[in-house]
Image 1 (tube, helix red, strand yellow):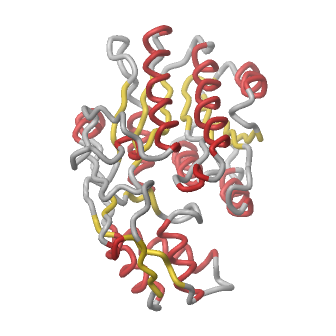
Image 2 (image 1 turned 30 degrees about the vertical axis):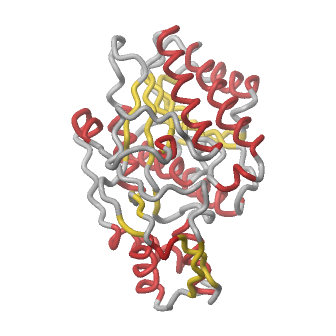
Length: 325
């Protein structure tokens, strides 16, 4: 059968699509190819996928219900959905909040509506975020936390997705799983993310802004570990009695941003020019995932230390930015 994958040109989406294709799945990828960051990176990711005969791409905005419905109507063989498309980035939500409501809220409703009209739907896995935990949670973050004090609009939209999914599972019996991603990094990543933007600044000799002396901590999770967890979860839909499921997916290890910078300096062979700044209100002090529930369900066991993952990212970065390095 066939997997419908939204955000196929995105960072995580392109990796998940490649993994699905590698195991012989048919994949229909949706993406609107917006210009939030360099579209050339998105088209390059897509080019790698279109080499596979099992991949079909449709340029579609998930907030447009008619366009999504046309795709699903044309492909009744779709039996699973991996919904990763979203307006990403915490700080950009301060600049363009409407983009987050359109993509993350309306887009999620559109995908839920599409899912409930698929008589053969086996499972829909969708992207939530560790951002939903906000500033009041105790580390390691566990799914039992209330997660009702978001510190950014981005986080609020992702928590809204979880609540809407709960309602749709209750009303229509949909098999739904939300995955709360923790600071995903790796090759083909998003240029707006800290590790990537730090790398670009380091090679250019430009200053990087580091909050609270680099003492903030994040649960950095390598993209291949994330991909393995997404596929393992997709293969294990919730029972009808479970309702909508929400699970953490992270590295289960919290490391300082200063450590990340040191690894980038080592890999790039250059020192960072650091400009210290006070932590903004959109940033929490630490993220740290409890992954016990995902491990019990799937055997999930992240296997990539930060040093290994950053070395792989730097190797890719040097190739993609060969004119700058």
